[in-house]
Image (tube, rainbow, N blue to C red; front, side, top):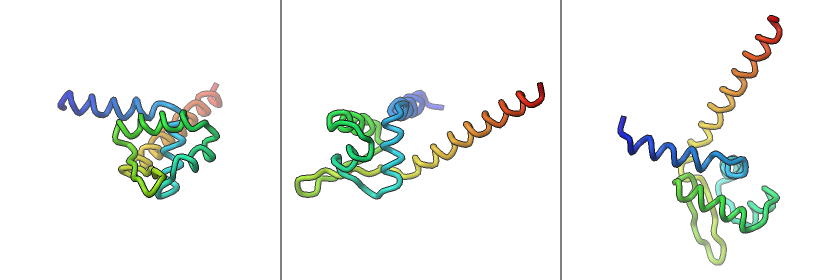
Length: 106
């Protein structure tokens, strides 16, 4: 596979490798679009932190922004990123099940 594809994947994975950015993506996945002030309330973070995390996600191509009047609204650029969370959750559940089975077999 092309090295540039691995680099692009790594950039996205690095952008997602933060609990607040994961929560942002999850929140945007539940809503069509949200402005920063709504995201501040939802995540209980200050404006500069939310803006910083949104900028990282935007630079990685995960979210997009759209200015409407005085507000900027953010949404997922490709909502299928939520499928990634489903896969990660399946890995977590599978690992947990394996650990429980190992514990029960001792």
